[in-house]
Image (cartoon, rainbow, N blue to C red):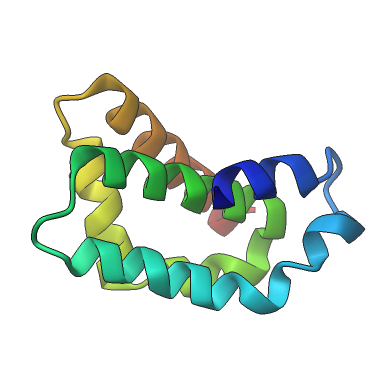
Length: 107
């Protein structure tokens, strides 16, 4: 559900859209929720795909403000698990999210 909300609220420009800015105070909690899922030994490949996609959406919506939140070892390990997945969708989403993070860090 978070992914759909973020995708519909974020703007097309480089600045944070006013609608998605309402979510900014909650981003840290959303990332903590993803970390909680990542630490669960029984998480599914689908959980990894959805979490990776949400990370990528949050990074594209909030830019550099979110980088410290997604540079944690837990999030990086979660994305790495996704990139190593045998499921194409999971691999694609995790790779995309990782590229979005790297793009911001190199800018």
